[in-house]
Length: 421
Image (tube, rainbow, N blue to C red; front, side):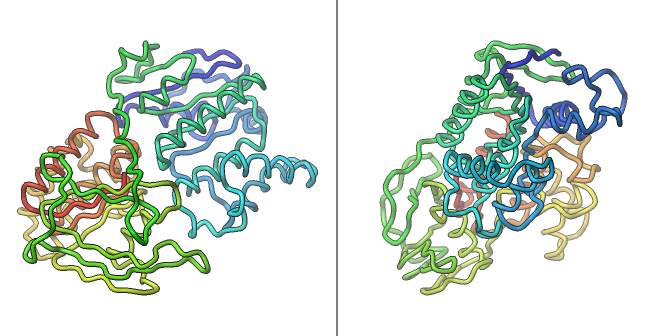
């Protein structure tokens, strides 16, 4: 595979196909097990003589924003790299302010990362790479935690700026709208990279459903109830179908009020789709329902067993193998090892996780594969209420449809599923 100076190239492929491995080799942060030849502007990323030159030449934004974070606030992280190459403080401040504006981070520069959404973290990591003005910009699914409309707008802006500067841009994605912005698209399949026309690519995820524009009283985001058939439900809940109630719910981060006097209920057999702008409190609401955050006012009553799956799968994967991780919930409830394994194997098969991965450590898998394993563990808990924060992030089309089909099964079983999309 060859990429020319100033080209914009998108790399796509199914989960586990090697997209992250490839761009990590290009950026010099992962060494191939079997050495072929990787040359970046004539330099060898794995030569001690060329290593420092490569890192000055090529910048990478990784999939998991936590992998790019060094300090506890955006401003310190963004300034860190240019300070290390001796850039003047005035120039650093000017560049940083420009990127904070373009990435909608003004006013949040001094915030702690634990006060930011994952989408904001991703934008902060992008700012930390853009400020270096590398010749080659590598982005590994760097927009996955953002709303699709915002992600495409940002990627388009980065590409436009790169073309003016003559920068080379290489990024990975499985989303049609993002792939359409590249000069050309390369698909990886079974270890082979092939240039493809956009309409001939396998595994592209369809565009997300449109964002709900209307909000509910007390919240900055929208919630829409859908039935197992996918159609909106407007009827009131009966007393025996209610599975959660929240009354006059309030929550603030310091002085910033996120949720104000929000009231409502969730019911069995319903799919609640939550959408809205970044930092509107979508993930915060799930954490309040899960009891991971304490309301600053109001009350929440949960009727039944609750389980949650959040945006970063790595934070919920901790056992030594994939199969043991998925078995964990059932084993903790006293289910026999044989029955727990049978249930775990059934769910992993339905979600399309290859049997050859079952004895691997979950953190050695690709981000998409990790997400499927994390979701399998969540589904294995057999809870009454399932909270999922961006469950389709990083999945190829097969993974996306398999998760949707499994959620449909849960709805038919009268489970309540709440999804931030």
